[in-house]
Image (tube, rainbow, N blue to C red; front, side, top):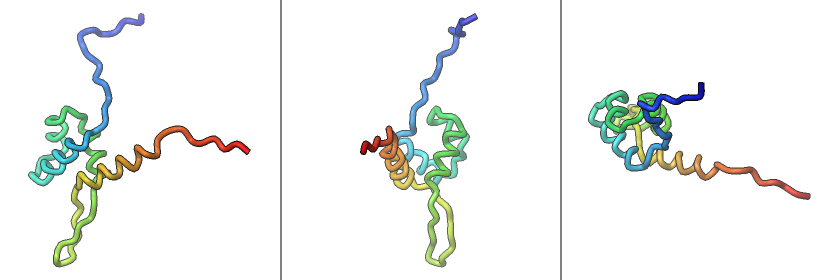
Length: 94
């Protein structure tokens, strides 16, 4: 009843590291799609799609045309900001 399938190993969940974000940025500039990037990093495709959505910024060229691009440093800044807000709320004692 409580047996596990020993032929497969459970993969531990882990966050995307900063160096992986820079790899994603480079691969996107090289026109790789998220599915290929996920296979190269060993992550799920949906994880890469979420990461790309989080790190999108709008850039304008000299003719003021807007283009959305992924920026690893912006995604890392958001990650650090969100990570600093984790934890227990303070208890206010009167």
